[in-house]
Length: 352
Ligand code: 5AD
Ligand code: FES
Image (cartoon, rainbow, N blue to C red):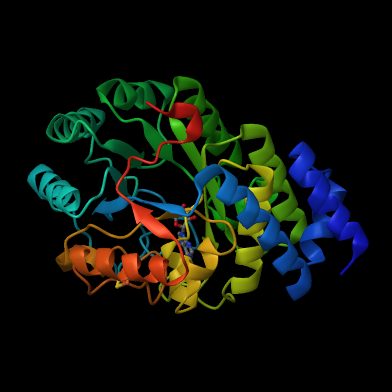
């Protein structure tokens, strides 16, 4: 193993940061041995903070209508093959009810950027869910909004927000998105969310087109500055009806290595083993947990719409009922010596 890389991992643990050049060196120095070393360190830290607990979030994909046109995403507005849908308020509430019965204490409401769901509608939904399930945490993942909108959802009772920064490098950002979207606004949103008091999640795809170690280094530095409570990462997976249909998929090993490095840098972060990771390898989510992740986010959406929320090809769990995914995940997590808990799973800084 490269002794300089080992030293950098040790320093990352101690100081929580590295220089851009050091990040590039570490990220491009990945091999099996270094990855095992990083994973070992990550698991030790993970165990200190979270024992063998894995938190579970019920994901409700309530609309796949989107006004944006991101080049990588299967529900981009230009994809005429996407069958668009919206769940109504009652549908969403019944997903939560079913999820509650199954032991979920966090609901994540995710959608495309759908103008149909005005701030008033979102606030009403948040309010109804919080009144029906006062012991549950509510996470929104509905895209870029004004600070005033974020504040309104927060005041209505939403306490967490997921918005991946996608890439921290503005030039790289412009290669993944049309000109109307900017890295600058994306970051502004994240700082607003944190400032308002949300438990905030950022993140990026591993192996997105035009990404190299330099971009990943910038992503890590951005995370070290933002200090989000949650970080969502997963491999890029091409979708057949997007401009990136022919681009190569992100690598399993690099995604696992990045998960370990994130755990080493942000020891108490909430870090999911994502569905995308489970899509590129049959044991992807288990491997994610064994690399330092501590959250899983199974789908609670009605089976009738699941296939339609297709951000990338071959997404898993589109035919299974919520209860089936819950049981399946319990078994998977148990099989590697960990345990899914019925708990809101707040970030340690936000314990009630
Ligand atoms: N492959 C992997 N992840 C994707 N996302 C969107 N499209 C893809 C894709 N083709 C991710 C983005 C987004 C999150 C909801 O899903 O990072 O923020
Ligand atoms: Fe959905 Fe295994 S988690 S089938």
